[in-house]
Image 1 (tube, rainbow, N blue to C red):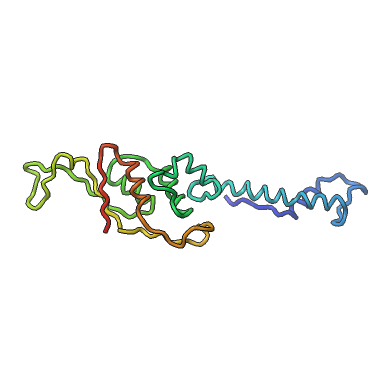
Image 2 (image 1 turned 45 degrees about the vertical axis):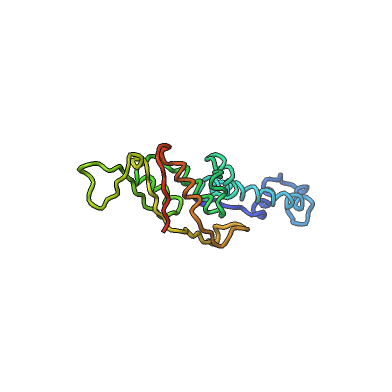
Length: 198
């Protein structure tokens, strides 16, 4: 839905059209009444623009002004990750938390990392058992039943995008701190994530 932003001239014409008829209610632009209404019209223009922008700001994938409210609602910024360095990364983190369906399967965890804009693969380990172990496979103990290995690039680079960044955002940022923090938050408490970067 495309919201229509009326200009101050539109509001001035509408207010003048609502005035009573007669010689004491002139429509000329140089009258006192027209100047008073011209002073009020920009306020209505700004209010309409703000109300229309609220439609955009109401969703975490496009929000800017309401981003702090979204983050507060979703428990962000997470203390272990700190604040994500750019507005798009903060939006992605809020959107990932909001849309995460939960679960401990590899496809669900991989999808969660993808929603954070990280490309990962996950390896799940199991303990070695007679009859299942093949030559060359590691002989893992019981604790390996609870280990996951998250394989990710050494540095995930996030580059600035025109129109999506705010003043003060870096042109590029890199690192996997948000990935580690978010994956630890969604993985089952009894599991041990191992992060491997290549």
